[in-house]
Length: 420
Image (tube, rainbow, N blue to C red; front, side, top):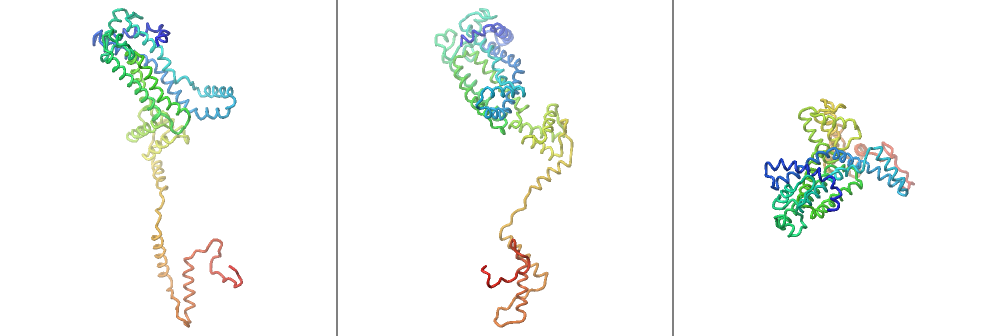
């Protein structure tokens, strides 16, 4: 680690100068030799660096979204040219160029922070050995050596020997407790940041290998930070814990205000926006009007979240306009309500209810028409029996439906010679 840090020694002077400037500010409030003055100087260094890296963070978010959207096309190219690696690489580069996607953009914030991170590590290592570095003269080095954060010197490490820790006016137990707590918080914040990205800001309708890679990184990164953390000084742990908390808060803001299309975060964002629009009857800010304008321009290519948003506006009697505003429309509300009524199906009746209805219909037919006389069952009785039988046959035939392919009306008797 010391060898790697020495490679970035050229930037130790700017880093030490920034720390000294913040230390002069906080030292006037908390005292020049306190851990608060030196610890807050490191935190302020992180905040200043991360503010300067906001444009790179925006590029990182766009690159991650583009990479996720391109996964189906990338998979198709790999399957099509699986036997030709050179052609596969050419098609991939062509796809990146057409869509304006840079795969390395997702790593830009980490790469840009690396020089400052190793420069700070180099500065703290020199402070631990009592040597001047950058703009830190001997008096400032001695002041930094006396600074303790919760009982642990800012230049102490988890793996330091008891003699080295004792030289910094501290105990090994205090150093290891403080560093262990910081390492756990650093790993937990890294895990939560990646987990938040996977659960809320990923398009769940697109199942690609990219999602599996991100899920793997969610578990690998915290382990890497935990292993490396035991070799970091307390000041470097403060630096990295602060940058993780900054990243987590920055990502929460981006997820809530500019979520990925098709994600769970987009559904929550559109529902919040729908509630505000239906309450006030108008789209509040320019950014929200841009969102509505984008949804209208998509037309039938909207995802499920956007369709629910448009349907919610219609139920409230509002229609999204191409310029991002909304207008009242009774027709849209009627269509939204009518569509729900048309989807209702009649209730299915039970067998007993159907038989009861048929019996009632037969009774109504017999009372409205001529009375039907029952045929006599006594032997030798003649006269009206054939007529009654004929009338009964007609009544029975009126309720019986002919089979498929059978002629309607009275059927001719079958010939005796017929087998069927």
